[in-house]
Amino acid sequence: MRKRPSNYLPAAFSLLIVGLGQLVKGDWEKGIKFILLFYFALPAVIYFSLLVSGALFLAVFGISTIFALIFWAYNIIDAFRASA
Image 1: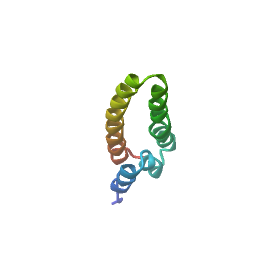
Image 2 (image 1 turned 90 degrees about the vertical axis):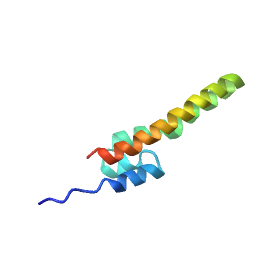
Image 3 (image 1 turned 45 degrees about the vertical axis):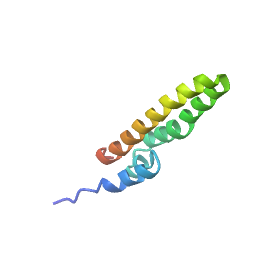
């Protein structure tokens, strides 16, 4: 009988750093996309909204925070379920 690899380790890595669990499982393309979106694109949108106006910044920051939390949870679930 073949032993199934544990999915808990990639999920734990994704809990710490978004996209790391996907990289550990070997899904490099998805892992890099997750990292770029979470750590570069999302903060860039927030920063540029601050340059435009304060009211826009508050709205974008609130929406981005909710999106980031949902995306972070999706990242953990994906690392747990997905198989390389």
